[in-house]
Length: 146
View (cartoon, rainbow, N blue to C red):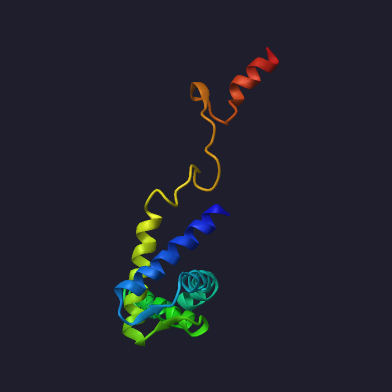
């Protein structure tokens, strides 16, 4: 749960940074940025995978660069639904999507998102004396029958 909140805050900061850097993007308040980041996260979780699959041949042909066009479209879609977030034109949406992706990528690679988990759970316990989980059938058989 903490991880979701941290990612939401990072995307909020990314939306606000893109509004500062890109002249065609305006965010009225911090609350608007927070709501826009939440909606962007939901849309990226549900609609973006469908669009990626539908545009897979074009994405392969452009070596993945068409993903930025999809991100720009999704940013325009969020601006359509969130009052207080304005994105003027496709170029502003494209540059805003680039900035949001860059900030999200930088934050995901930093210490903020990382946890002490090994790939998706706690780390496995250390094995003393290099023992493995395998059973040595020959040794077990000798002990049992001798």
